[in-house]
Structure formats: structure tokens, C-alpha cells
Amino acid sequence: MASKNQLVEQLDPATTVLLTVECQQGVVGPGSALPELADEARSSGALHRVARLVAAAHEAGVQVLHAVAERRPDGRGANSNARLFRAAGRLPVQQHRGTTAVRIAAPIEVADEDLVVRRLHGLSPIAGTDVDALLRNLGCRTLVVTGVSANVAVPNAVFDAVNLGYTAVVPSDAVAGVPADYTPAMIRNTLALVATITTTDEVLGCWLSRAPRGVRS
Image 1 (cartoon, rainbow, N blue to C red):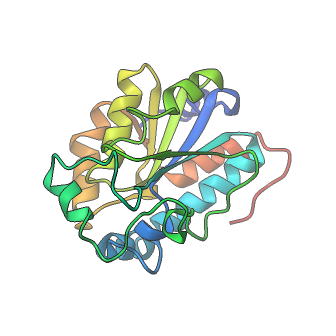
Image 2: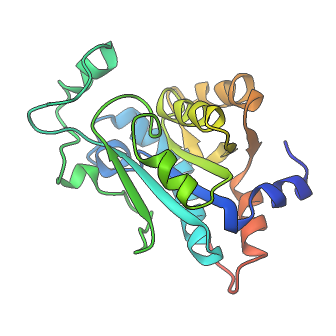
């Protein structure tokens, strides 16, 4: 855990971007292709905390970027070189471009100033997408990583962010994976080695102390 002063410095709204990872209806919504993951994201409170962080980011002037995983109906350009991809192609709910499955899930609210980056391939919200260029153009130094899953996409995002020179901050209660006990173990034994591990309330405290108006959540 970083000290309060270190966290405040890292989370300066002018140089921080909040990333939500695959918080889309077809992944964490009621009609999810991955119901076990969706249930965990909701029952643990992780999805609600992501929504709180997004609302606070809007209030504090922190840029929000939503990373969405989708595929074309014909599968063109999608990976097939791992069991995960092949299994995803057989799921009854598909993350098809232009459908409700790839819309950001409630209770997260998307503002006009938010950026949405959609990828057709791979495991990472950052590698092979426009995210790095967007972050650099925004003057980002710290990337706050939230969402799902702690099994694959979230650690990919953290590693890619660190490799690209950003400081990664992970609110541990705003990410989810399956089974439930895997997420804290992965954070403790892996992400804590490369990222600042914190909580939603600690991030909110840093941002809302700077915001012109308070956010009640």
C-alpha cells in the first residue's frame, strides 16, 4: 500500500486516467456470456465500486476510458490460438459489434467526455489497441485499472501499463474474477509486485477532496 501522500500524488486528476475493463453487458450484465463472472462482479460489489469510481472521476475531472472486447459476427480478425478464444466463439451470448452485449453495463454511467476503445483481438485492453497513444496524448502518468477479469484482462492491462512506463493503480475491491478467492491471491502475489494496490474509498478520498462538488455514493 502507498502512503496517503504518495497516493494523492499518483492520483493527480490532471495526469490520471481511469480504465474500466470489459464492464460490458455481455460480460457483467444480467445476460452475460459468463454468468459465473457476472455474478461475482455484482455480488462482490466490484461492479458497483467501478460505477462509484467512474462517477467520482467525472466529478473530479479525471479522464475515463472504457475498454470493450468485441468481435465481428463472422469472427474475422479474432484470435483462435488459445482455448479461451475457441470457447468464447461457442458461447450462447456473443460480444458482437453493435449489439447490446458490448454496451457499458449499468450502473456505470458513460459521459460524453469518456473515451471508448473497442478491440477485436487479443487478451489485453492495451496491447494492439489505441489506448497507449490516447493515454500519451492525454498526458497520462497514472492508469487506474478496474473491471474484469482478474484472471486474464486485468493483469494484462496492468503489465502492459507498467511496461509502457505508466504507474498502475489497482483498487483491489473494484476488480473481480473467478473463483472468488482467486482475485485477492492474484493481487497479493502478482499485481502487488508491480502496481499500487489500494481501495475504492481511498481513491475516492483523493479525488473528491479536489472536486468542486462532492459525490454521494
